[in-house]
Length: 109
View 1 (spheres, rainbow, N blue to C red):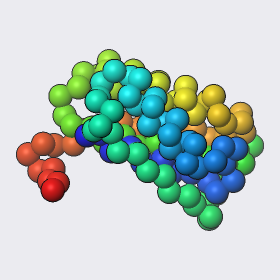
View 2: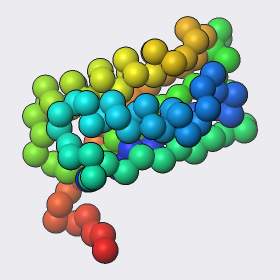
View 3: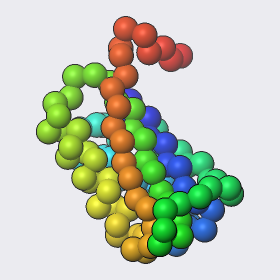
View 4: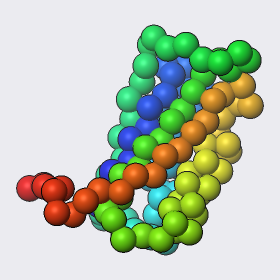
């Protein structure tokens, strides 16, 4: 488990597949998940509008099973944001959101 979705503007300063790999490893480096359980994917946007002074964006949504502490979620969020800072220009809008999945209603096969 977790599901990591990277939404980004098309004009990334890093190749999309490389970004996926770096984010995937950052999730693993948090120490919260086994490598074999992490699922990471990216979606590029052609059409978007940003705040003044921003020329691109990356937003990471991480859906994880309920049960982690606020501190663990903060650690994951900071780990991911630091990963993005390493590869992106200051003119990029960078954001991360961690959300809980309810194991009673989550299904997979």
